Length: 369
Image (cartoon, rainbow, N blue to C red; front, side):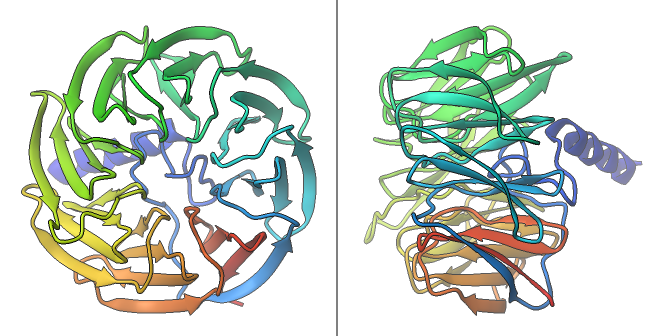
């Protein structure tokens, strides 16, 4: 009976998030930003195709309806087919560092001028835009609650915004005390995000009212991952924390006092474990219950890209251009591939393929021939 309930919960979570084996709608796969794919990783890694541009990618690719969407630093948003053919492009006056999000027939993306765009996924036509007073560095997230879809994103003007995804109409906005760098995570009718004010904010998705606020660090540069009433997040001070949102307390905290290098990447959650990459070159796997280190793996270079979990395996990429697949339970390396260009964007994993945007301006599709 317990296993059946868990299955139904996971099934409903996938339906709500829009994620399937062939759809990775935002840079962490779902609105709770768990970083878990419904697809499998390939047993071999080979380059199936490459799409080349004239600028670099810092933005993570997203995939739905056999369409890959990725934004470049020169302000061009590309839609590319699953065989590497350009479908359309859209040009902004400013560059993109934030990943796009796909929801139904829409693509949402924010630029460094502080504008969020809604485009047609099929044609790239601009449907509406909304202007903020600061750059947008984090991915927008669409969350469905009480039969209502809400588009949310943070800005460097200190506000978290909630818009109607169909019209772009402002539903509410919530003011924090500093820049908002990451993406908001959503679960159980609540929106959770950190920022440069060092707090984790928990607000209502319905009206943007503050439910609670927990002090975490000097800066929270990345995005949190949510599960039940817990949030898991790293910070710029080199600490990784599990926050009990119900009791407004930090359940456990890990840090290496000899390094204190930042956690920029977002964590991934699965099977009692939380996996996070750090700028100290290591990928860490923590026990969710107490924060003990189950294993750690030296990737050889800084890890800014967020890991992705599939079943009992975890995928990671580093700034040297290495792609690694490790055993989730032991940290043992199962597979590796040297791409040769820095990777700061999170890979998308769909239909047994790995889609990676690298800082050499190329989008790579990796898998088995």
